[in-house]
Amino acid sequence: MSGLAWNHASAVGVQAMDDQHGILMDTVNELRQQLLRGENHDRIAQQLDRLVEFTGMHFQCEESLLERHGFPGLSEHRAEHQRLLNEIKCAIEQSEHGEASDVQPLLAFLRDWYTNHVEKVDRQYSDWLNTHGIY
Image 1 (cartoon, helix red, strand yellow):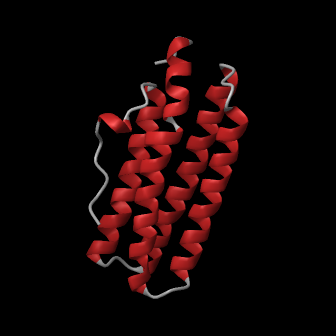
Image 2: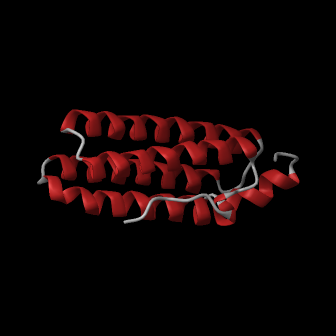
């Protein structure tokens, strides 16, 4: 699996969110690199913890921004965040109880999750915030 790379589709047009999305992308890519280097379980677990922690913080920031500006799809967006966070935690738990070779499905899941969430779900708020002066 190749790493995530920033491209036009990755940008939602809100600098703070784009910056955080970049950090998420870097975190997933670093996890991939650790796995390719054969890092020990503790180092990988720390990176997974960072990913979950930062993802939760990012979701809170995003929801707060959407709430402040009256985004009409906030409740659905918040529910999607909760669903995704639960899926990430479940995927991590499954990978921790499996063999070392089971990390590839986790990486594929994280890559798909990131791409679908940022490029599809987050796109829904982009125009709304831009029309409210948030870039």
